[in-house]
Length: 128
Image (cartoon, rainbow, N blue to C red):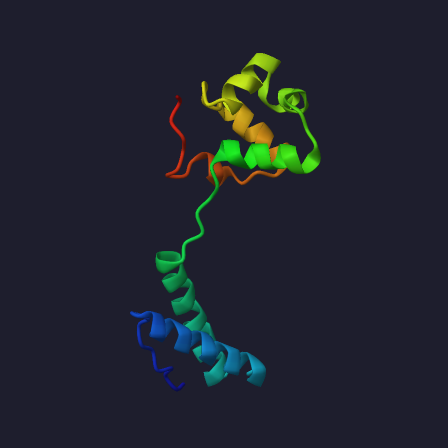
């Protein structure tokens, strides 16, 4: 089995070159388990690792995400009561006066499709 030449992606130029090579390999549509398919696999892994380090997608603030969903769907605070609790609790959370409980996080994730990661990210807002 031949080896695939591998070089780390250390610079933005390395990254762009790897993306260009991936594009070229995709056009060639290499057969599975071929040397070109192995190269495509290795390059894709390197690009993914580079992107995780240099172009990580940050999750939104959970309150901002909920407010966005409310605006997009025409919801009022009352529409969140079934997921968060009484009107006063919804208001406290949306005004950053109270943290989410695990049950509320579960409900918002399950019923509104909010990723769990937004509730545990580094941008988690402090209570004001």
